[in-house]
Image (tube, rainbow, N blue to C red; front, side, top):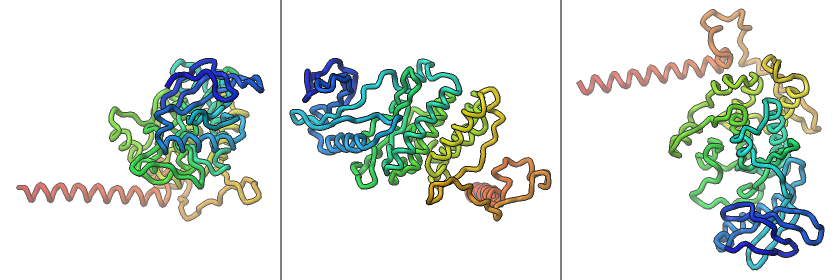
Amino acid sequence: MEHPLRVGKYTVEAFIGGGMSRVYRARDAVLGRTVALKILTDLGASDGVAKERFLQEARIASNISHENVIAVYDFGEDNGRPFMVMEYLEGESLREAMRAGRAGDFRRKLEIALQLARAIEFIHSKKIVHRDIKPENVHVDRAGRATLMDFGIAKSEDVALTRIGTTLGTPFYMAPEQVTGQPATAQTDVYAFGVVLYELLTGVRPVHGDRIEQVFQQILYQPAPVEPLEEANVPPLVVDMITRCMAKAPAQRPQGLAAVCGQIETLLSHHSPDNAMDFVPAPETQSNSRGRAEAPAADSSNELPESDDLPEWMAKLPAPLQTHSGLIALGAAGVAAIGAVIAIVLRVAHII
């Protein structure tokens, strides 16, 4: 595909990059503004699903108006090739900023995370699931504005374009339900947000591996290691926030990112990075039908006495295990371990 000189009323000025679709800096000849022009290649245009997904992205993004979501001004077709016209952003991707050490200090990183969380929460309010939250799809500029981009595999509530036998998303940021082929929901984006925040604050991904099986194994069965977070002096509140966002079961994650936004806002407004380690998280709130925040009722059936009243052996357990459900889980794990040992012994005896 040759680089076009003009598409409709847009004059092409420079090639920016791209793969299946190419992005150019262009000039709107009528309004006189600089825009980003995204054009599907001939190969992409010949693929019915790719073409429909491109147009779906344009339709979805053009209906979103938020300061932290890229604006789409126009879309259509030129000589059989679909195109869309977007806000032209100065700056770089969050991935580039992280690699070059330009993501800023702890506070600056939290500000980026807050803007990203607000953008995700907003698209969820429009019944849109992004499904590909990752540093490459977050843009940051010199003014500190973070912008969520690339709705190429986003899914609105009434649209399904996934090919049979394929899983959309970038492996390192995929939620367990994506790995197992279940439908993506808003909770899928919450998980990916947790992964991005983890990497933003530590410089490393919570999952890694040279083979896709290794990556999927960690996503499905291994909790995110907290040691890199602790080594980076991440406050306990934020560590807790990240681990909850990355819970294996969608129901165990924050139900949307509104409460996460509130926690980050509180941390930024009342605590500097120097004393943020002392911040104690407030109970997560949920909005009622009138939009007011309400704290969830305490589950007294799962409460145990205060730690001072616990037996010495129980007081040494991690806090999550100092509950009825925690002790049940611990007991179940013990039973499973004993069963495994017995099975091994019986197998050895049979061989002998």
